[in-house]
Image (cartoon, rainbow, N blue to C red; front, side, top):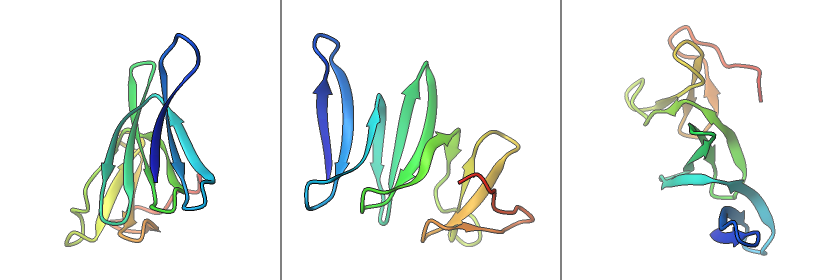
Length: 113
């Protein structure tokens, strides 16, 4: 479940909180700009100091990929089986629909997570 609340006194800062069915906080983001719901994941966009970055959360509320990516494409690669996560124009990798990194097109999985 996704909940939106305003925190602080007088600053109207928005915080988005993902909670499980027991009410336990699983993940939260400040200054989240947009949320896109997909079949098996939630794509989140974060704006910080005018920089927009993207991340992925699963429906359990677990952060699968922190919002550090310049872009996350749709599943358009390898017959719509893979999506591309780009840190910048030269550094990227692919994930499958289970949200696991895959070696594809001579691009290996990073060791950053």
